[in-house]
Length: 112
Image (tube, rainbow, N blue to C red; front, top):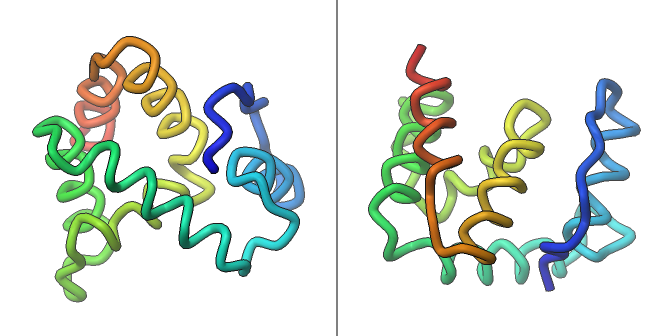
């Protein structure tokens, strides 16, 4: 299960990123099936929201335009080194307040 309560600390190294990733995904192995299950849970949570859909499409088109990723696959990009800290905050806001202000801000930032 995704750890919405974890407060991601700013990371600058791959080791720090992996430590934060493992914490929010509640696993000890970045390659475990647990990660896939958690990504499925997250996708189920956000898939019907238009702002989240826009963000996932933007990520797919920005980082992997040739692959034509679907939104569910684009979620893996959301948890990349570049975006995980922001995505986590977006998910916290969405889960706690059912709002997408941070998602909208991230969309604008990516489009710059």
